[in-house]
Image (cartoon, rainbow, N blue to C red; front, side, top):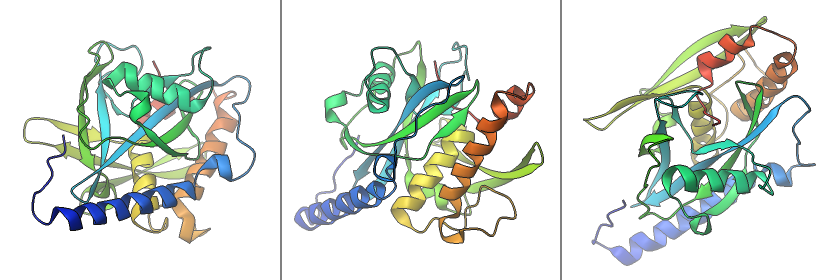
Length: 264
């Protein structure tokens, strides 16, 4: 996948190693395993995990995404991370994410360096999602399982914090206004919209790696914790939606509008 440039390779490799070390350090600072008691899933919710697979190619951080098969029951044809529901045989959320990535795109679990688990998300139907960040080999070429994935593609992670590439829209949920974002991927032959859960966590990861967490807000008109706006906003969004999910019958439509994660 990654075609190395031949000019000044020694210097380029050193810079790439420094970038990888910096990424590892920054993601570790937001690893929920280190920030207190590990958050478990409440009764009444399903549990799922996704892999946020990143790699460094010629000094650029890329993230690997998939387009889900149109034949899947949940979120067909959506752009998503590899991932799915936890099996009884899975020993952890990391195990779930790695197993699903291997099943969907042929990524060997032993080639993934797990960097951390970010704050939880939620998607329909009443599913708590644990986002696992993993560093994958720069030469990995996905082999998709056609029953689950139509195709996979790499995107520059930095695109998700480029104001000229990201669209913003607001949505009101039971009296609380939230801001969500989308971005268009195009390689000339294929054009896909990345939005909802997937876009939110790509943006979060990009902000963690490339800059502060302010500017991109989840809670509309929020002035709280501007230096950690996106991270705190996602946490508040999770708590707000999960408190409604088991008691509000019309949340299916609400969640499906911006949660494009499949949990097959």
